[in-house]
Length: 67
Image (cartoon, rainbow, N blue to C red; front, side, top):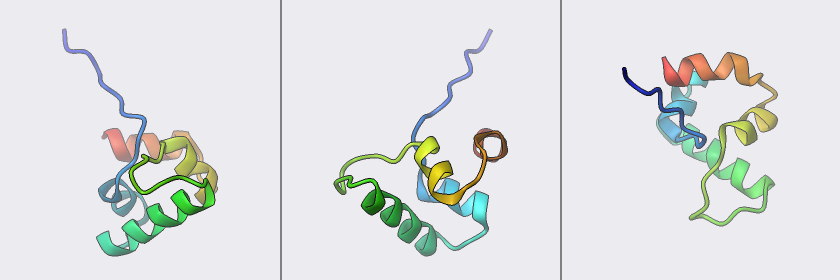
């Protein structure tokens, strides 16, 4: 039986898939989320932080990320 692995961090490719924006625009969104949460460049953004920033519900986002 396979274990289902769920990530807690979000990447530009995920944002691209969710929003339909380009990869470059997705990196800008990720940077804006980091700035609004006072995170350093090397810190990761969680899916929850992305949802809070965009106003989307986590139930809508998870199927798009995890398939």
